[in-house]
Image (cartoon, rainbow, N blue to C red):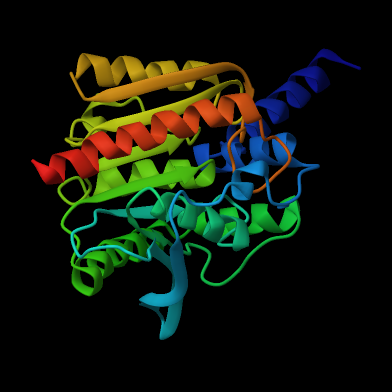
Length: 289
């Protein structure tokens, strides 16, 4: 091969490399999720085997509409509840609003909340990681639709249930959207719980957070690596934000999920206790003062 031909080939390589489209953070997260969850299934984890600590009732409710389509969530509350309970928005994993998330909402309701499990996938659920990835991509490509969904969830809890204090909690993909709910509705959310969801470290973005935040992360996590979680924690500390941060070093991503095969009983039990304590301090005790 002559020198001129080599130069042409090298030039073409540079041109093609320059024309490639960088993957977005959303797409990188979805690809990492496929690697992490490629052999996973949305079976009920041990998280759903724990009964609520008091009797609760749940029902499907319409809390949002999009393009004329009713979006139904699952509303759970204690059977002997008064009218002054705080509320929780419960955000599903990438599998969608399935029965496992409904049971998780009921377990949370048993702690003394009106719990609304929302549906960001508009009635769709997944049985395979491939289908879950498709739904996750559609969600990422329609963020404004999802944010409107969550804003209507807040409005529904206030108007139809008369609540004055609202927290938000989610796992994996739901953990990311728990953070996005707080970032986009800082005046409406009084406590935020993120279970190993993607979190920002941009201080300008985080500056709006005025509510307490609980961040729960896994040390063996390919999707939300510890370095991302620690950067988030450092930024929150620099901003003097109210953050409780826990890293379960021996646990894998999704270790406390309602659905899936990665459940870690010891880590999940500790995280649940920290979650209920955090919510009680910041939603129930504050309201009682």
